[in-house]
Image (tube, rainbow, N blue to C red; front, side, top):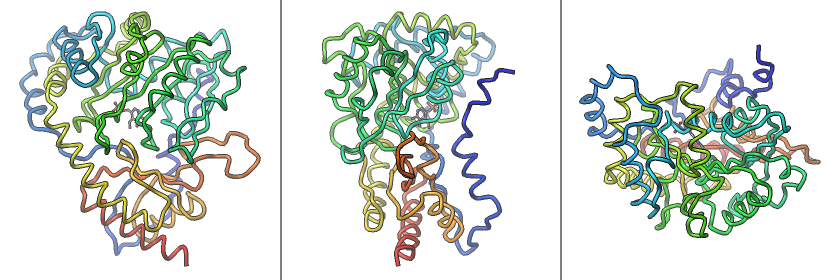
Length: 400
Ligand SMILES: Cc1ncc(COP(=O)(O)O)c(C=O)c1O
């Protein structure tokens, strides 16, 4: 058996099940979950129709590189969304959701014989850690600074770690903080990548859900602005799951440095991760439409505008830059808060310490997720407002 499998951490929702084991939530309340970040807005009918009218595709093996039509839809989207000219033949690949691609990319990049390090923010999306571990690398958890809108403190990563770093994951907009990386931070990362030679994998799956007037800056867009039009050592990952409310479709794409895309294609050909022709056709329809994306964003904006003020009266929380999460400071322990909230009010939230790691600091709070919870506002507005009201009542009682 692969011994590295034993080094994987339990998934946050497994830990949540253990935390809630044996509890019977107050039957006076119907259950509301703000736990899992699964989009719940309706899947647009035109995407379902495109899927149903493409069923003849079931009779064919797909190309791992995707149909030219699909890659052309990616190309046009990148031009519209970011003003980027990306080569459809050499700089992009379809993936079956960003999750598998973010994981598989580490298998393409890492040379385990060199005792590599993989760097990412703390808190983080757990796939980065699993990809690092199964790729034979050591994960390095870079701290975030709550005083600077949870920006990652890249200067806190010591040179001896950078020297061994082969891969860096960034997540902008971030899960769980919703923070968007500005151009100055990208500049710093590109300089570090040039100095130490590591590859940047940019997770951009929340890029279309944002609250300000300006759409979040993308990794390749930042590179282009800084004169790096070859996108060297940079590959971004995007997805339809959140943008188009199709998490079950498993559809996204990777784009960036052609050297890495070429090797990623080779890896994926053996791994057998080609996208079904049926999904390819439905994906073309989805990437070619922006109306449903704007409507979806508007739904989140109205929901967050109603929910955030209710919670901000009792918790340390504010409207994020982007994403569909609130990352809230709670009184006392995050796990106690989540357990008691579930028991008394039948609302599920995710303890922040489950999506961050102890980094060996001097105090018990060296887990940067401790004392915070993540709330995914994916249900409809009325349900999220009701959850917020219950959380506010619970917190007020707790503070008395
Ligand atoms: C930060 C982050 N990246 C990637 C994913 C994977 O999304 P998908 O595989 O549906 O594209 C998720 C899903 O929740 C996520 O939160």
